[in-house]
Length: 458
Image 1: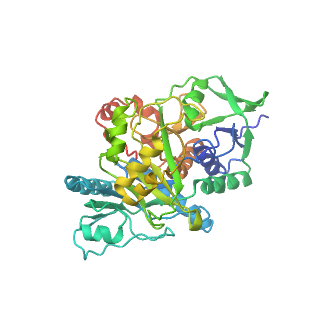
Image 2: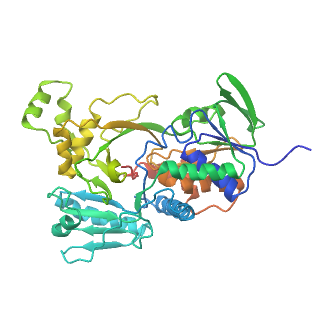
Image 3: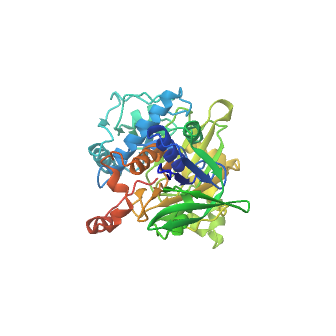
């Protein structure tokens, strides 16, 4: 008699694939799960993020906020169970502006986020207002929602490193960062202890018979292997679109290249206890008169004198002698081909440093010293509205867990749990339909996309 138990193959050992395996074996008890990865686990894009998380998301409904709240619940559970091996903190996200006209918009954004489940809004309009900063360490902090501070004395008391031009900040509280590598390894170790296997190789073919998945062909250093499969999970990160084509499915996703810089903060420009810092204003980069004149003379550099978009952001990283700053400035987010290694971006480090110095003036000293930050990055794989794809595909037995854009680490646990429940035919949360591929077959949904607005990307 043939074995009828599920044989599950997961394509990709990034944070999405590992989380899917973890919940399949730990929560649902599946004992025949194989993760196929061409390289090392957590090495392609899962180790390139800022490792941050937040439950602060735009609409037009509550789906993303509910999804992230669930994921944060699960991440906090792992932190508690492992004595916080994943180094989870809850310092928050600090959105800041020097434009007084943005204050009503900032308040409205917080009210909208609260209505969608992020937590209450607290307004601080006087210097005596009882604002409480987030702790440097730990994650058991009672506040959720956001604190809107418009009293400049209060802002500069608690955030003296911000530019004196800052007129308002929004401190989002259920937010912070963690070690993505440790989170991934905790889940991978537990999955393997429960029977999941990690197989080195590249998925080069998928057999479909009778309209459903039958087997998966793997290549490793020229040697071929065939794995029987009743279920196939596509969690291939930046290669998601390419792998889906092996089963004749065209996923509505595209890639954006995103970079970041890191450098030792030897001058202490940003205190170790600082939250994630996000600048909400457009800006012209702060060049000296001589630099401006030199840039203007060369047609290839004149664009550096133009207006740059809002959204430069960064955070402190590490402790003690290894303290550093991470900075990201996504000033050019056009669709990109997926190419490894990533093509160089000659001016990126300079732009990111100078852009962040508009928010934190002390960082300008690094440009004057000729600092050479380390540049790395990866690809955001996105849907049009910047929501993930999690659930079944048109081929029976095939599933997708991807299009996690820049929120893969923070969404990983809820994404893995949801994918596992789809396969196990378990109870699904209310937000599950929002992430199905089939949503694009809904005429009303496609009409909604035309006026979707902000997708919540930093």
